[in-house]
Length: 247
Image (cartoon, rainbow, N blue to C red; front, side):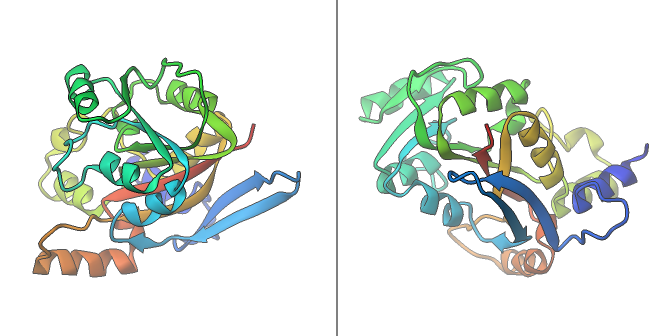
């Protein structure tokens, strides 16, 4: 099976007939609290930044932020700081001991731990894992542990680089620098691989979108890229998926 099949599968959700077009992604089924089966279908869409989606889920909620250290306070894209601003309560967890200690001294509620094996002894309304899953050797174990920490009607929000992104193809196929495609990542995901992985571990997709990132200074190149991704969201650099529990 060659790479072109995997590309087709990633874009069309594994439907060889092509009836599910790229612009209309089937986001499967989810059972509501009343036992009624509801179909969540969403057209592929593009947003400028992940915060546009994430913050609406965490507002006034109890949140677990996995991989919270990031760039730390002062960094332009430090997600944990934004979560703390709008949430009822945020607990952060990270495997970087020095970073955790630094945040504790600044007054943040953070703990040191491995997201695949930790047990915090409590459940949360929302779990956020920004740019984390692609670094984990055992992603199934991670999802099982997140389910253990997620309330029955809670959501898990994942953001990750998009394997089908235009920049990735540019590097791999034009420059032929295949060794630089993954960098420090274990693997890169498509919408379909996330969907399959989620289903195997008791989750289904509630919302999916693609995003680019909103820099402090917008260049002509940024506007041109935004135009491209607005028409072809699946070529955007990043993928955001909101997962709900099915069991």
